[in-house]
Image (cartoon, rainbow, N blue to C red; front, side, top):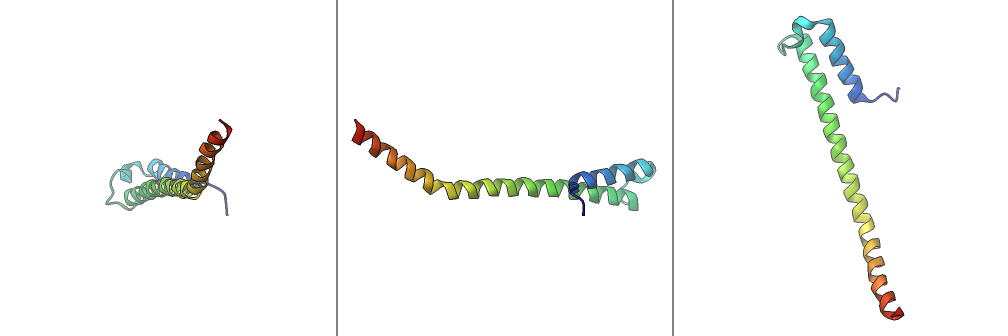
Length: 84
């Protein structure tokens, strides 16, 4: 199995089909046009899911770090009061 990005692979397949069968590429009712539409839709959906997963990962990381950050900020004022 290759490390090739599936989104780029789908887009290359759509482009190749478009180049090979230009007369049918823009008509989604043809086999080629339908495949191109499916390839492009899959690529867009995968990108959307990746972006959402990245967002969820950032939210989860923020939630995990939240209590640690709060504890640090609680310690800072106490240190300032004791030192001043």
